[in-house]
Length: 230
Image 1 (tube, rainbow, N blue to C red):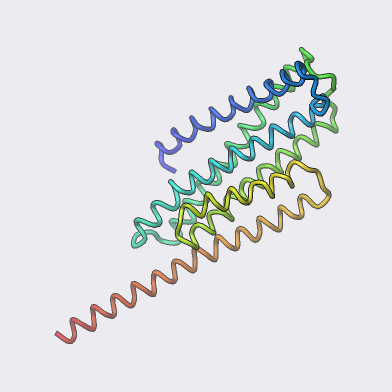
Image 2 (spheres, rainbow, N blue to C red):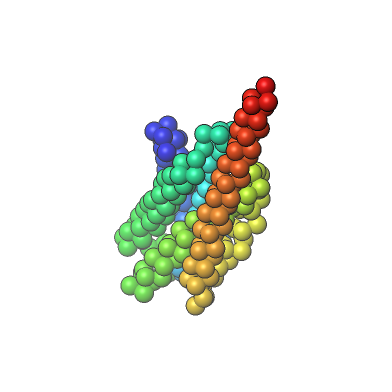
């Protein structure tokens, strides 16, 4: 990613981090005013926050895929080699992983720190709860990467940015529920899904590259044949 790209998306991520922190205290405020029983526990508040984080970063992933992957790929196919595409994908997801980790951990960590001094929720933080929160954060990050890779693979296959956004919209509710609702099969589902998404993305890139090479070869052969006839 270029310096301008980093600056632009870093500002977006900073805004998301601040927004998540504000959202946490908005939920706390509503809970205290309306006496919402479901959010009298830290776990449910942070689970909802992670759900919002997942949706936000999936949207960011789709936008970055459009601007950073699809546009250069569609408009510069002749100069767009397979290794260049993979380099861009790795760069984008490295940034996305680090951003989501920081953007999620810092607001939640700050909230937990402030709650140790000023209690707004009739609950307590325990080691078990901290472990569960860490697990939920990791599951959210894996879900975002999996949804992003699968959507990007479909978009590249169809050569359409619109398909990236449509796929993201369809996949977010499915994997959002897996992330928010605890299950003993959550990690297994996410690992298998990520593996499938990686294969889809790799095969799509390789297929498009081979197809372009064949088309370029045919064009070259056609030109050579015309020149020899002349």
